[in-house]
View: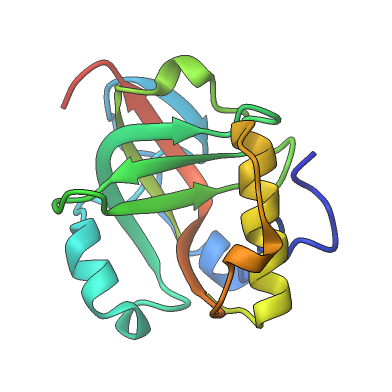
Length: 164
């Protein structure tokens, strides 16, 4: 469901150079997805979100508790940040990796390329409508008054485990 071309939040765009710039997967405990984890150090979600422009296009590692998982295709999960209500989405191309809904509440270490997407008002409506559909929630397009900017990690690898 998420692979709709009319929803800008569904597509991933990883620079092949960034994808190729990694060492061997590190021995990080848990269930491995994609390339696994190759970077030794994580940056906090708070640090990344405080200045996303400093990280756009770069390969980074973040970690946190899984807050939500795509219920339709398993193509993304959200990690909780340090501040209440703060999350970072880890998105992969549909079918490359599939994250189980059972990951909610577990700890994830995620690695990918930081992407910042300023959206038009029309694109924002499509994204919000898609999110409501995924969550089984009602949606009123008139409720969207301003365009949004998405900052997320386009995924290269992850490890999910029971606890930190």
